[in-house]
Amino acid sequence: MKLLRVGTAGTERPALLDSEGVLRDLSGVVPDVDGALLADDVALGRVRAAAESGELPALDATGLRIGPPLARIGKIVCIGLNYHDHARETGAEPPAEPVVFFKAADTVVGPYDTVLVPRRSVKTDWEVELAVVIGRTARYLESAQDGLAHVAGYAVAHDVSEREFQIERGGTWDKGKNCETFNPLGPWLVTADEVADPQDLSLKLWVNGELKQDGTTAEQIFPVGEVVRYVSQFMTLYPGDVINTGTPAGVAMGEPEPKPYLRAGDVVELEIEGLGRQRQSFKDA
Image (cartoon, rainbow, N blue to C red; front, side, top):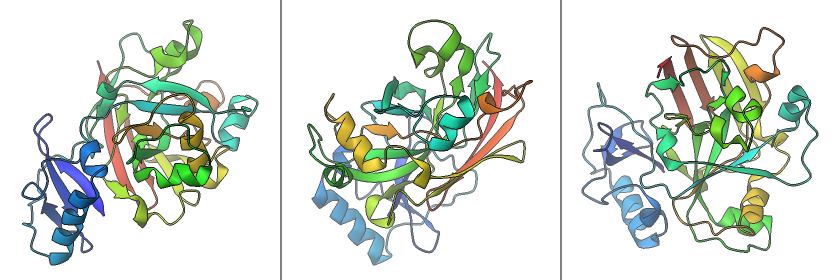
């Protein structure tokens, strides 16, 4: 299923994109798309049955905002330097263990919302990423297979990053990762049963129409199941938590000087095979 949330920010309602590409209203079946829904097999069964019945009300998508596909996100765990080609372009050694950092849930915006370039920013960068949405409580998982079994679905994430704040201002990466609007998510949450192999997905990103990133999840150093297993050794993952699993080569930081960091007026588009497409205009905060 392709689950999403539509409406103005803060008042989104649940929806579904059916097999014919028609947007359907789910608000009469479930209150929202969140961790509680993803952990409830009975409620998910109602959604599937309603989708298959063809009786869900159609929504007019004209002018209708698409919000983040997941409400009440608990935490966003991010994996850094998780693609062989990205590590090479930044001159970093591939990590022996996953590099873990966090983004606050309040960085999440819709896939077509405006993204703000932080004040005094000179190195705002782009990163297309596969987002993993947790559907079952995960703690001390024993295998990558167990990790995959705890995944409810997948989405497109844009891990916008300010490199000076991240690398040159001391401390951890968090200062360059948590600026407002720095995690567009969506358009859909695609349930795990529709993704045959999360290690066989193409990822692309364009800046002002120019292709910048063209990668595949096959390049991940630590695949999805292993990432979930690994993270569960250090923290409990709950339904509705999100893991951003890293970005392939092609970021601004990896280009020759002068590096083409993002500025107000730039437009970024990104997509992951089968998971949908995003588009954001950038403006000054």
